[in-house]
Every structure is written in C-alpha cells, then in structure tokens.
Length: 219
Length: 219
DNA sequence: CGAGATTATGGCAGTAGCTGACAATTGACA
DNA sequence: TGTCAATTGTCAGCTACTGCCATAATCTCG
Image 1 (cartoon, chains in turn green, brown, yellow, orange):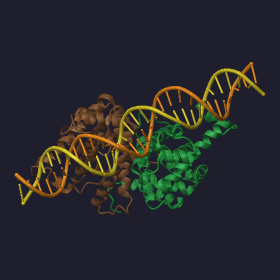
Image 2 (tube, protein in one colour; image 1 turned 90 degrees about the vertical axis):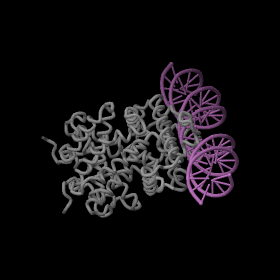
Image 3 (cartoon, chains in turn red, cyan, purple, blue; image 1 turned 180 degrees about the horizontal axis):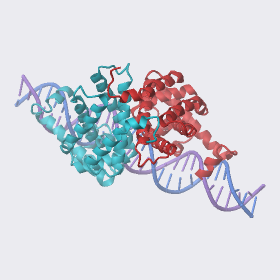
Image 4 (cartoon, rainbow over the protein chains, first blue to last red; image 1 turned 180 degrees about the vertical axis):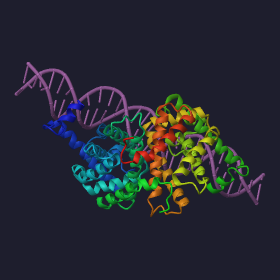
C-alpha cells in the first residue's frame, strides 16, 4: 500500500521491509551516479549498475522505470523539496517574490537532502552530466515542465485564482522556469562551482525579468 | 557535401540523387506519421515504418538518428521557418514585439511548409501526439531549448548586445518560450482545432506576460 | 511461535531500438 | 563507357526494457 508506506515513512519505524527497500534504492542511485561519473552515462550499462549495487538487472527496473530515472533521482527529491518550500512561503508575499524566496530557502537545506543519499560533489558532477547529455537533459526538461504545472497550481491557490480561467499563474511560472533553466545551464557550464555562485546568478537573472520585457533596451 | 546540397537545394535542379533522397525522406516521414496516427507512437516499430516507405530498416536510421526524430521532423522545419521569420523582422521593432510578430508572420505560411510533405490534418494529429507522449514531448522540449539559444543569439544581434555579457536576451527568450509552450499545450488539449484559435490564445497569453510579473495581482 | 498471505527478488526468454562492417547497387562526371 | 563516390541492403550484435513464473524474504494474525 503506497499511502500507508508514505505516511509511516518518517513517523514510526518503517519496518524491515521498507528499510531494506530504501537501502536498495539508495545503493542503486549511488552505484549508478558513481559509474556515470567514472565512465559516462551512455557507456554505463544497467547490468553494471545492478552488479555494483548487488542486485539483479531485473530488480533495477523494479525501482526505476528506465536508466534516465536513476540519473534524475536526486533532482526528483530536490523538486519535491522546492514544492514544499513554496508552500511554506507566507501568503502575503507576491507571487514572483514567493517563487524566488522559495528557491533560496530551499537551497539552504538542499545539501542535506542530497547528502542523505550521495556525496554533494557527486551530485554536482551528475548535474553537469544531465545538462550535457542530450537524452538526460530532455528528460530533465520534461520533469521540469511537470513541476511547473504543479507550481502554477500552487501559485493560483495562493492568489485565490483558478488556473483554468486566469492565465497569469501559468505565464508567471513559465517565465520563472525559463530563468531558472538559463541560470542552471550557465552554472553548469561554469563547472557547478559553488551554491553561492548559483545564488548570485539567479538573483541577477531574476532581476532582469522586468527589464528584459521592456520595450526599449537602451539603458 | 551538406553545404553544396543546401545551396543547390532550391536554386538549380538538385540532380537525380538529391531528388531521390528527398523523396525517400518525405516518404519515411509520411509513412511514419500515418502509422503513428493509426496505431500510436509506441506501438509502431521502425521496421513497419521502413516497410511502409519501402526501404530497409537500416536506411531509416541513415535519415533519422532515432524514432523520435521522424516524429519531430515537421517541427524541425517549422522552427527553421520561425527563425527565418524573426530575421526578417525590421530592426526597429522592440525585442518582444519582434518575437511576437515573427510567430504570427510565420504561421501565415506554415501550412505551405507542412503541406509540402504531409497533409495539414495529419500534422495537427502529430502535434497532439507529441504533446501527449512523454518521450516525444521530452525530445520536443529539448529541441525548443536549442531553438531558444539561437533565438537569444539573434535577439542579441539585433540589439547589438553580447549574449555572454547581457542576460536580457536569454531571459526574454526564456520567458517568451515559456509562454509559447503554455499556449501550445493548451491548444493541443483543446484538440488543435484551428490556427485561428492558436493565434488568439497566443496573443492573449503574451499580453499577460507583463501583468503576471506585477507585484500585486488584485485587478 | 508458526502457518499462510504478501511482497520483493532472480532467472529466462523475447522484443525493439540502434550501430558497425562489408558488399552490392546506383547516380555523377569526365 | 568506365571510374569514383554516395546510397542502400544485409547481417551480426549490443543494450534497454518487459512479461512470466518460481523462489525467497518479510509480514500478519491466530
């Protein structure tokens, strides 16, 4: 039962079975990311990942629908983390402000979310790999577009609007997402140095949203 | 030689070999899109497409790197078409205005670009399929992100800026692209009825870019 | 505690996407 | 017409991924 599993996850002791599953999953992620970092995404086979995690190849596909998914597993956690951060923003904050603050708030605790599964540095390498591997980047963009849907939903809820009738939540989130992708790409090209740099980059680019839309750029 | 091929393409008679290649390619696209419409993307195999187009499966992969590519072939043409439309916009137009006008101008002639290869209605069905098939949609988003890069380049050129130093071109294009994706999705969900509807939708949503970024949404 | 219901895992066979290598065919061009 | 280059077909092979069934591990409840 997924629901019960999800609820008991953090509350009571999840039971041996659940703990074992989590360990297997984490082990698969770690093994995969390490192998990817070592030999590249395409040159790593699922069989190798399974072997490194000491499970059968068939089991791998019971945890991840495909090879992409294990590469993007941490992104998944981070996206959920971000969603939570947004929901915790005070209702008084303006939409765009809330989005921006949620990003920053979420980055403060992001390293903990990551390090619960893999070393931070490995995750950074993985992010660069995602940005530079077409197949992974495509899947990444797809997930982001689904996140944007949920973001728009949440933004609309905050503002007491209906996503179906008012275009502003979707438009805002689309623009916001665009900026995030641009900064993400830039950051990855610069080597994913520090979270500080990403923070500054994002601040600067988000601030340019208004000016970029201005009729005239002479300034 | 790609360059020579590209140049002679529309000028002199391209020669039998080139003509044959184009026919094979178009035939593959038509066969693929028809089969996709008939039995769905995943349930259509490359072997079937090749057989319908009367070539060997191996030849299919000489024209398209993978199965996704043939499904997105027309999008490819349309993106190139859009790029051209943007380049033809008068330099006096403001960045965002130029982007919007390029879209509309490009749609006026889009049907001709499409009908040179496949019936318009088949292309509409294909677009809906792209939006509703995760794997295709992911690939689609990836291509769009590459288009955005070129768009930013062109916008920067028009404004006499350097993409590397001024964030505005990229930010603007990212926001613009976000709106286009939102309208595209909406339009596909409504059944890709008419280009008119898409036009109205786009106009309305583009106009919301400014308001959506506003601090306060009470209005 | 122990029997029986659940659930996770492994093994295997098979499909489909995709590639490299080589041979055969076809168009280009002097 | 004959030579050269480009296109195509064939074939063997790898890898991602799935369905099926048997087995083994955990859980539940009397």
